[in-house]
Amino acid sequence: MVECRLQQIALVARTALALVFLWHGLVPKILWLSPDEVAMIEAHGLPAAAQVAMLAGVAEVLLAALLMLLRRRRWPLLLAGLVLVGLLVDVVLFSPHLLIQAFNPLSTNLAALALCLLAWLAEGPSKTSTARARV
Image (tube, rainbow, N blue to C red; front, side, top):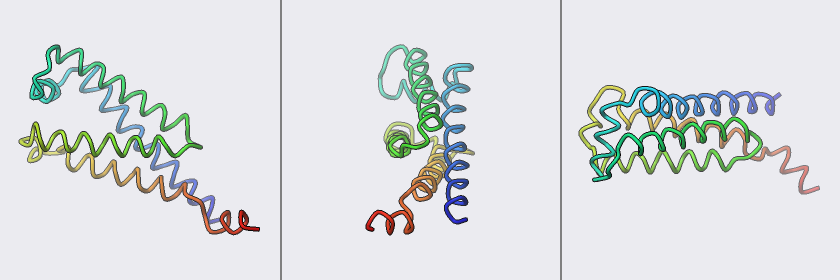
């Protein structure tokens, strides 16, 4: 019963996390290039902001796919967590003005990091499987 509940929690957390990456990859970067995305890229002094945004969007869509297709693997959760922390640090350093906006990167990334942690913990080895492994 507990194992089934943990699997359900992990699936919901992974799905929500994948949808976050899918949305943020597709909508503001690929389908409708957001001026905020362009400004964040330009803050690094990078040329061709539209192309960089497109590549970043494709990477986020691929990460969403990995999260759902490799549900028996935990490393996509770790990768997602590292990406979220890295992007948050990037915003703090290069675009701190975004941190006071509604639905800002801090609130979004912290919520997504919580989903990573929930899935990670729910998919971790249980006491039952650990006890069986020792026998």
